[in-house]
Amino acid sequence: MPLINSLHHDEFTRIVGWKTTESDEELLEYLQLSPYRIMKYLTLGPKQAKEYLGLRACLKELDLDFDVYYHKNGKPYLPSSKQLSITHSFDMVCIGLSKFNIGIDIEKSRPHKILNIKEKFIREDEADWIPKEREEEYLHVIWGIKEGLYKLNGGNLWNFLHHYRVEPFELKENTPISSWISDERKSEKFISYYTKVEDYYLVWVLDVE
Image (tube, rainbow, N blue to C red; front, side):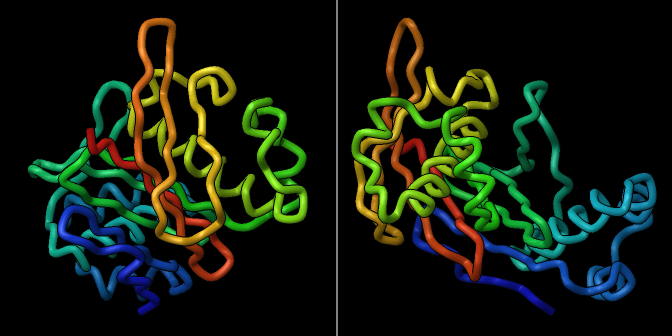
C-alpha cells in the first residue's frame, strides 16, 4: 500500500499521507469499512470517493477509528483532544494531527499555474524579497502557507492579499517560517513549515501562541 508515513512527526504534531494509486476495490479490501461508511462511500462521486478512501487509510494508520465531523465553517474535527486538518491534491491525501490548532496544505508542483495566479496571492511586500531565480518554489510554499492559514482560521478570512502575510524566509525544509493573519482590529502570528514529498509541496501552519 502506498502509505507515505513520517511526513512529519514530533511530540506535538504528526502528519501522514496516502497516495491513492490503488483501485477502489483494493482500498476497500484493505480498509474493511463498516456498513455505514460503505454507504457514505457509495454516495460520493468517483474523485470524492477515492479521496474518502485515502482519508480513511490515513486515519487507519493513525489508529483513529473515528468519523470526521465538520463545523459550520467547514473546519474538520474529530471526537478527540487532537486538532485536525485535511488536504488533498491529485492522488495524494494527507492528515495533520496536533496538540495545536493546525492547517495543512499539499499541492502538486505546477510552475506554469502558480506563476499565472501569483498576483492573486502575493503581496507587494512579499514580492520584494522573493528571489527571481527560485520564484516558482517560493510561490508554491507561500501559497501553501496561506491555504494553511485559511484552514486553520476556519475560512473566516479569505483574501490572501489583505489578510495573510508571510515574512521573508529561506527555502530550507522543516525550518520555521513566520506568517500572520491580520484584520482591522488585530494581527496574530503563526509558525509555518514546509517539506517536499515527491513532486508535491506539503505545508503545515501551527498556532503555538
